[in-house]
Image (cartoon, rainbow, N blue to C red):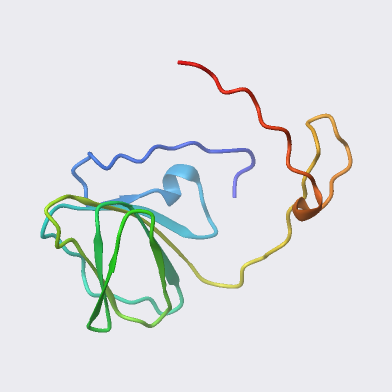
Length: 141
């Protein structure tokens, strides 16, 4: 992974069903894609040998086929599908469907973060032990 940050932009109006985001950002630890399905469109029935996938519905309603059973998810809902499980993404609704798809394999490294009380602080502590900062004034348009 490159040092620093990378900034990208999703474009659900691009006309593309599948937009890879991983390379745009230089992400090396997991896959990340934007999927846009117009009314009636569906993806392939597929599975992954090692990778688990998470789908987050950003817009519309997902009809997710899992081994022949259908599950419906609305905006703001997300689902994890395990490796080896067949799945299919379907848009049965009259509005477009926009999903963020994340996929990866291997063990997650949890609780490896450090937090600082301010930008000037030199000592860090685990995030759960660092108090949240004060809220900031809201900018007016």
